[in-house]
Image 1 (tube, rainbow, N blue to C red):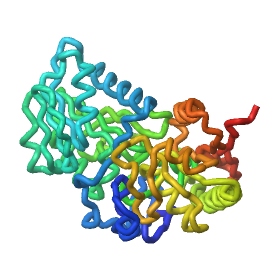
Image 2 (tube, one colour; image 1 turned 180 degrees about the vertical axis):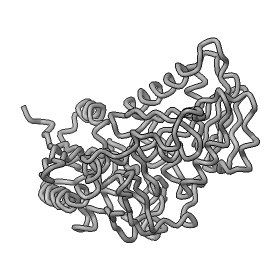
Image 3 (cartoon, rainbow, N blue to C red; image 1 turned 135 degrees about the vertical axis):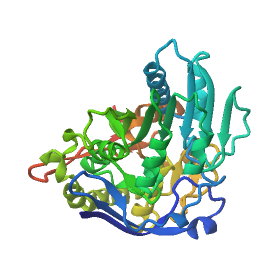
Length: 405
């Protein structure tokens, strides 16, 4: 095992809305000790304490304002619909359904094929009426909840939930208990190999206590009688897992789940490059702060981590976090207490440099900035490629002036 990341005093939740600086600065903190298994590549927080986590009404990770993300959601919904023969009705179950947004989208795109849907999520507070045949249980999915799955259910889905669960074996056992012959299981979760390969230090945070790569997610599900295939989605940042009950001929752990030699050193590569990347970004922001305000675009998980790390290296490097989610605007990021504003407010406050937190949203953000006539310099918190053989760091983060000819 290799310890690949250590941090103290990190917020225990990223996607929370805090109304003032005092509550933001005093928000619950924990310790991050990310450890990687040298055999399968699984990464987990050895210092994680589930008692410090509470997914309640204050939790908000809505990114529905992004056209890029909406296109991703539609693509994933269509994958589910295509996996079930067109002549069959769909009876859907979603574990970790949030406010039910994906559930509603699937229901809408099915054109009547989704006859019933059941969701499980303790953070769900949606006041919006649910479609006919849809029920959301405001609770965690435990063994006691398995009985709430209708016998006719033929699709089980869990998107961006498994990485929040420290009881890895218990959650996988619950997924397996929800399965039956003919049922399809779909899981979406970040790919930790992508994080390590690209030096994405901003993607390690307390909520994500268990991070997988293709070999480790296949191995975990195989241990519980499920056979899975894995494909990259969301510009390779996420994995899309499709699984079913394992056939009698399948082995306990598929042979291809052994890690390739070039993958086995990703943890060491990340450890090597992390400080260099943090230094480069701090140096860049110090220089830009001399000519105007600095804001990050994206006040969700990546942004909360980036603001905290940068402001711990030099005071007030990040003036604002920009977010299109109205529920976050006017609030503050946990621990760093960075104020969250809408784009127009940031522009009015004289922000001259914007750092985009996720390169997937670069095109739509640049289009909005251009439409506003905002003459700001834009930097993208993007990938740092590393040579597997020599640990040579090549930074692909680039800055482009909006008013350059």
